[in-house]
Image (cartoon, helix red, strand yellow):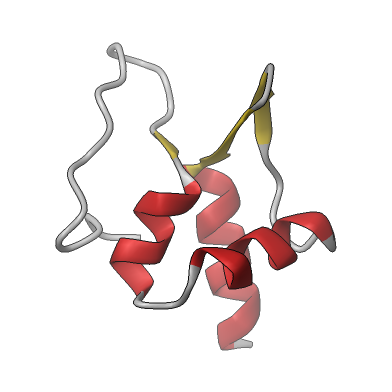
Length: 70
């Protein structure tokens, strides 16, 4: 996936994969946060949990978007 237009790229140390918040995905796609949260809860998108915080790795987002194109 190219850079998400309109969404600042997360700060990631060199060599680590970018992680996106649900709010980042909402701003990028124009779809509501609840739509993204439902996709996550249904297991459509792989996530990383940091306590109560949920992040979507760039590779998981790429996999999800690629699957939607097929």
